[in-house]
Image 1 (cartoon, rainbow, N blue to C red):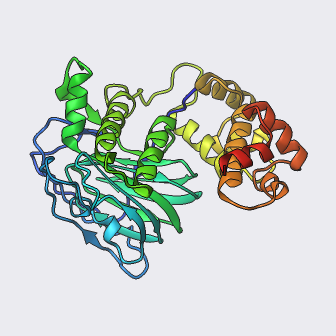
Image 2: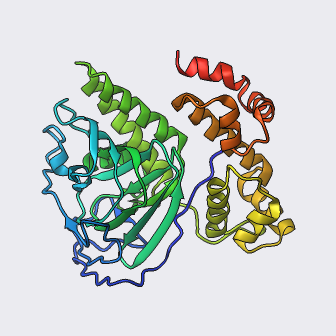
Image 3: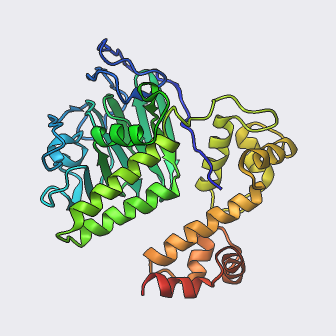
Length: 363
């Protein structure tokens, strides 16, 4: 089961005066894969971070896919002095994809568009991320495993609310075009990638982790493998994160709207360490508990308490694998009553105990 997270968008009330280049007029935040490209400009003032103020950064792009992909072709986020780069692919000879792993410090800035497509995987968190696209503003508390996706060719503003470990992937526009054509899309010219803020996509997450492994363990054969992975990411973007597959924004009869579902999931993820009642989540969405429970199940295939337990177990898995906290501490941090409660639910959903999972994750 995969739940499609959708951006919460409301009008942006800060100083924002876009001047669109006629060569590039995205529709509803989407960017056509085959349209003539050119940046569109915006004066975004509301995202200025401490120290840097209202900053507009742009790095020159070199779109030739036959040369190694370097940081000079990215938006410039990775060049910020407060970020600590842990590993990057600049010297690895990768041509179809650029990757960088880092520890990011809080900041706020606006960036000019680049031709290629950005995917940011959150390696820890949760952390609040705000984003401006054109005249729209969105903000989400993004948990570990959440994704920030930005199609190429558009300006944007971003504000990071806390320290965060991330993996940045840039996929060549030429690769996405090639893969879309190979998928035999009936009207490739009409396909556009869709921005995402806090979406979860287990397949992209697994591919990104493979890229991270290649960053940490350079191998002479890695460029070939990276070419394969870049095409796998591109295929997933076209299939699941483009107008080819984007669901309609209106809710089907008896289901939650996309905004309501987004709010409900946000509320659960922000309060995983607390004792949550159905009424609390329903109130955050603006529905009665009865209507919310019925519509949530029709929208996701799971009852709210079942989804909440899966979220808690997923957070427990991450804490067990990435921290040395005692299992009892992990249980409380994930909203379980005690260690035995975590063990019982973890075994039921994962098929093993927390202790055994931790040993295998660190083997």
